[in-house]
Length: 93
Image (cartoon, helix red, strand yellow):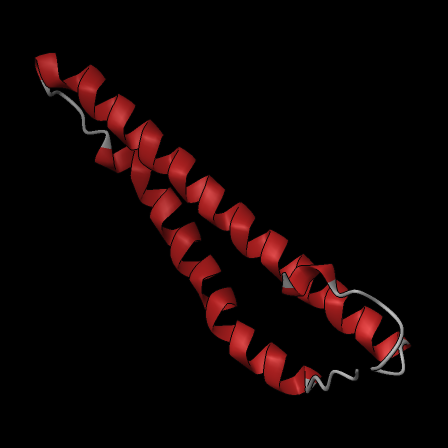
């Protein structure tokens, strides 16, 4: 059984996901300000919340990076194959 992939189309589709990287980076720069200053008893709560948001953003950025790596690897394996017999394209699962 053959599988036909249009690498350009795959990359165009994933370009949207890659655009999220800039938004994630921008959001990370805001977490320090989000923790606030001079909030008396709320300071530690706001700092912890900002830290949690930063951690979530880091995970999201890692997902974008991992997906990019998986797509790149899948397309490279596809390009090296005849599109029919070689490769299992683990990233497509």
